[in-house]
Image (cartoon, rainbow, N blue to C red; front, side, top):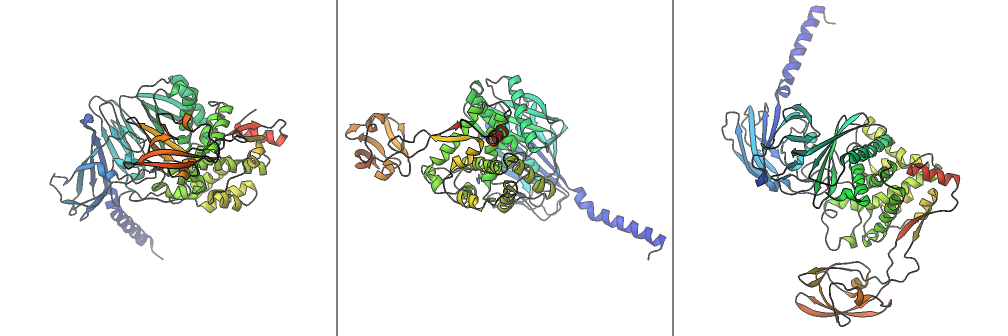
Length: 600
């Protein structure tokens, strides 16, 4: 046992040792500076200053992909002019050691300053863009990180072009265009909009929301904010809490554009600037708002195990994108409808349309939704002329499976529970309590917990299989019936998609199982004549009225050679589902319908 004096000495020495051992970590300083002195050239300039590291060499890495968009995009291809100096300005030797890694031989210098330029002229939510009108930065396409310091907190200083006054970002501001971040993940996941854009604001869930509107559009600000607030509050109501203290929407209003990308406490949305003027365009934009906002919970926090911490160097594989994106797709239109922004009939038409899309895609019988998730890196973002024949979208089919799972739970519990309960349970357990990603088995077990039965058959048939569901067995629980308007008709399935190029009709796609597929028509064939008659821009008159089983002579040019094919006419087996309500729904059916669609 130590005496009091010895105890004090021991405590003093322990504190000194602790302070000395932590001194290097406390001395580390990481500072990024982003400038754009000549925006018309499309080049951003980046400076990364790391102080207190003192290594023989430091590797600086540029990510190869953007979380939320599952494709290796090779952002390093846009980097040029890389240089490195110590704090006195003395040049440090450096070399490129891999496609996205620059090694700086710092010789234990107290501070290393790296500079480089990034060419940014791809206007998408996944990349960075700079021109004379504005700048947009997606972190992984702009900011390198010093290897080993991904968990290091730091500062970002933005130096806007001299005529620009506004920066919108989810990063925490300390004033004067200076922002802080706790680690690289947050820096990379916090896009920036820089320019003179309009900034709108609303509050929801007690949290301020900023809407950065780049570009003109036919939106009416008061209506837009009111409806965005409704959609956001519907999301919060579903999940029970809002995990951020501030949120930023970056909206790009473009001549042509669409899509969004989720981030930790912000999102980037792109839309056609005139979309707001029609019901379909306006509600479609609101569904996009709902989709990206719902990602606050589903994927940014509640995530499959492989999707975090991220490896920015390579693909991060998961078979659960049908949950992360597909279930989110299930909720986007639904939350817009529940918020009162989308009419119920319009919503049901969208659900039926999604089912039609899945069932009329030949690839739905080839690729499972789990395979689609895993192969997103090589297929979903790299579509070709055969994609519809070989692939199914994990967004669309995942959304349809979300519908079926919701109906399964509601049917088994007589409307007392739903997929909503599963999502809240998963979020509470795996994000809040365990703070880790989940596995497919854990998601399945959560579904079974609320459905009250095993779902082995469901997963085997529809997640890891290509079996066609009995849709009415599910939607009947809500007193709905899917009616195939194509049933009883005898239409032909021609199956060739064409485009007019310099006055020539060129084949662009050939659908598996169609007449032209069976008859050997190829993509890139030039259609010359059908049954001896010259092909003009519209081939409908030349193929209509044919009888199933007929063979039609088709003349094409293939690789400069004239060929004649015999095309067998086959029947069209596509579906065109629409919902109808049963005449006399039971009390349980009505309860399920009302709870699902927030009616009554």
